Image: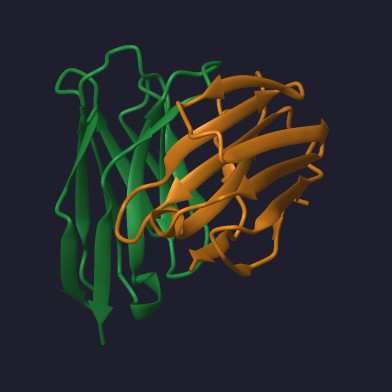
Length: 116
Length: 112
């Protein structure tokens, strides 16, 4: 199983709503990531969890709140978002450590988020 | 600061042609170079990857060429098909360090 599963696939939310994005992987990967991707741009790193601890926060606004309940799950809690936060939100996972070929990130299909 | 420069940003080839996408990097600490393929509305999917002690790697119709001294690498797609139409991202990373640096992406269109 080399899948990273994200739910929901699409989400429309108002600026006062609270919603959560979910991500799950069963590859035994111990690093999990949230990326944001705007149209015609490369993915932009937001957060990294390593062994269920937040290891990198790329100065993301506090209206985005990540959570890693266990080694297979990653959530992104959303609150008071702005229309400019509309984007494809991608979850990814990778081996924490390893030799050649164990370092690539595997991406989920993404959640297309629209903030109205 | 764009640490991985990718070109061209868009590319149109005819079926059977060999599109070539080029990337150059600046950080000599990078030691792993994956390529991702992304179809509209989908997440990026790992296509092929190379390490800097190898000059070329082939997987099916996809070949990476790597020039360590020039700090450049490129993706060639042999016998390209319309189904190869997608956006391709080169990337670079330092193994054990969790940040992947992506190129800006190349939108490839293969016309029948």
